[in-house]
Length: 53
Image (cartoon, rainbow, N blue to C red; front, top):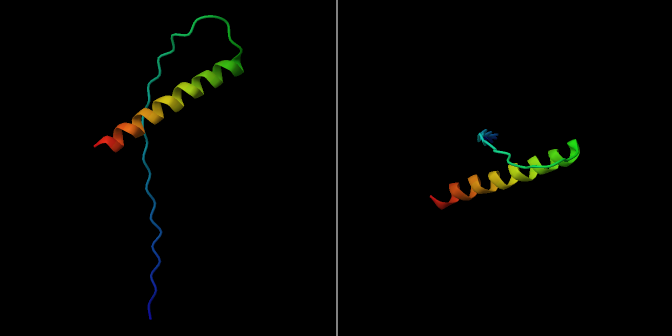
């Protein structure tokens, strides 16, 4: 009896462009958090568009 194991790997990437129109004073850490939230929001949009097709 012959057993064959297959380990597949798939890699993909998406390029997301963010435009920051924030105004005011913000700490560096606060700005990082702000950009992270914007990025997460855009990733969700991209994933959602992929499931519509």
